[in-house]
Amino acid sequence: MAEVLVYVDHVDGAVRKPTLELLTLARRIGEPVAVALGAGAEATAATLAEHGAVRVLTADAAEFADYLVVPKVDALQAAYDAVAPAAVLLPSSAEAKEIAARLAVRIGSGIITDAVDLEAGDEGPVATQSVFAAAFTTKSRVSRGTPVITVKPNSAPVEAAPAAGTVEALSVTFGEKSTGTKVVSRTPRESTGRPELTEAAIVVSGGRGVNGSENFAIIEALADSLGAAVGASRAAVDAGWYPHSNQVGQTGKSVSPQLYIASGISGAIQHRAGMQTSKTIVAVNKDAEAPIFDLVDYGVVGDLFEVVPQLTEEVKARKG
Image (cartoon, rainbow, N blue to C red; front, side, top):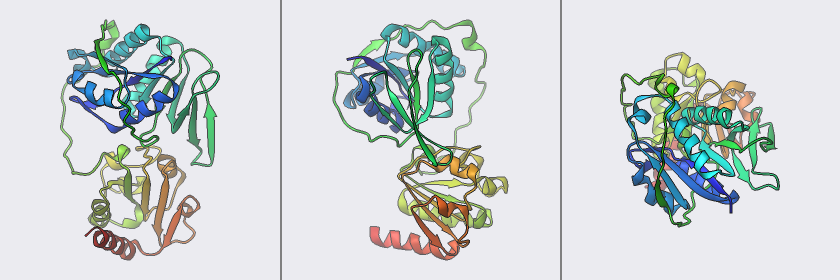
């Protein structure tokens, strides 16, 4: 069976959930070979093996931490040359999509981004994408070279499938351009204790209808009762009510949770572009004609300042 390269997203050896989802998809089209780079790369092996990686290629060098993107492209190209895979899979994060694009150019292959499903085809892997605010679902495949595909988080289940997970050192030669952009400082992001927005199974978002930064406490309370991440529309972010890092939409982050709750969000096309692939969408808005209701599975026409706190209390009561 052909091998499939899977780029590992990890933090000091702790593998992030989107990578485990990629291993599930990779097993549909071949045997997963994971590529783990940077500090803690070898520590990822046990987790990756538990979820289906037959081999784990590892490399650690100062370049991965000190410079942006290109050293990782060099490493992934080295893995590609060593394995000759049937496909290369990466998570749809901002960095991974840049790595994917640069790799596709180097190896002369086509690229598909933001896939939400993947299946084997007679002429190569077939990717499913949700486009135009979820109005259409497309299926496509790369017709030239080895497919390079990025997949949105929460697109596949995490499934245990024990495999050998043999650790092998990956030899990487860094090119002249690998040190072009240096990281000169880092500021740790303050932890909120909530899930990462793009990986969360549940997202609760607030928009213009929240009417002030102080009122986002209502949104946060519901999110915390559900163990969810907090999102915001561009209108709320532009008004300074919530950080840009939490913006969901075309100019923010794309999310694909199992449950998305939109409170006080009208449903502009730019916002829909960032959450259209959510499995179940619930909206709370006092305007019955708001465009968001055209997209939802469940809609509540009402004042969010009455509905959301009641929902929070009901969730707490059922949990307690």
